[in-house]
Amino acid sequence: MGSAGDQLRGLARGLEVLRIIHGEARPQSLHDLHLKSGISKPSLLRILATLEAHHMVHRGIDDHRYRRGVSLDEIRSASARHERLIAVAAPVLDRLCARVKWPTDLAVRAGDSIKLCESTRSLSPFQLDRAPIGQRISMAFSGAGRAYLAFAPAGETAKILARLEDAEEELVRTFVRSGRLQAVLDDVRRLGYGERDRALTRLRGLNGGAIDGTWGISVPLRGRRRVHGCINLIWVHRACSTSTIVDRHLDHLKAAAAEIVAAIESTDLPRP
Image (cartoon, rainbow, N blue to C red; front, top):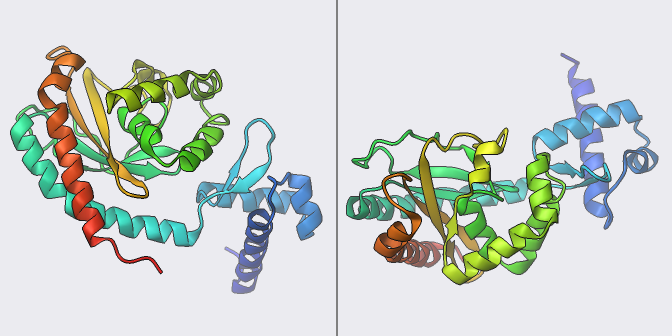
C-alpha cells in the first residue's frame, strides 16, 4: 500500500479525470484525457478502471470513449429515495401477496439495469427460489426493465437505450440496435405491463439463466415526474399462462402500484 501522500495524489488525479469528463460535452478518448490532464496513459487506464468499477464513468464499446456515469450526489439521492420506497411499499406488497398468493418483488433502476430491493417470496405459499436482494437484472429482457423503460420520461429512456446499444452483452446490443426493443416497449405501453423474455436465460450475467421455470409480469410505479421503480408478479409458468395471470391479477397489481405511488409522493421531500 502506498503512502498517504501517494494516495492523496492518486485521489487528486482521479478527481481531475472526473472533472474533465464531466466538463466536456463530447465523450473523451484516452488520448484526449492524456492531453488535457497531463497524466500518463498507463496511469489513466488504472484511474479509469477504478472509476468504471464504481459506475462514475462509462466506456463505450464501439468508440472506446469515456462518458460520465453517476455522481456521488446522484448515488446518495437515489439511495435515500430507495430506502423510503421500500418502507412505503413493503406493507402494500405483503397485502398483495396475501390476496393473489403468488410472490411479488419490488425493483428499482440501478444504472442500466434493474435491481431487486424487496420481495414477498418468503410469504407466498408457493415456495419459489428466493432471488437475493440486491440482485441486478437485465433492463432489456426483464419484465421490470421493460416496464421501467416504457413509462420513464422520454429523455431518461433515450439515454438508457443509447448506453444499452454499447452493452457488454452482444445479445443486448443486437436486440437494441435492431429496433426490436423499441417495438416491445410500444407493446408494453399499450398493454400496461412488461413481460419477461425467454432471452433472459441466454445472458451470462444480470440474472441470466436463473429463471428456473418461473415467469413474470411487471408494472411501473409511475409518478408525476419519474418512475420510482416497478413491482412484479412471479409464478410457475406451467401452472398458469400469462393471459390467465393478467385476467386474474393485473388489476390487483396496478392497484398496489397506484397505492405505493400515492404514498411515496405524499412523503417526498420538497425540492429546493
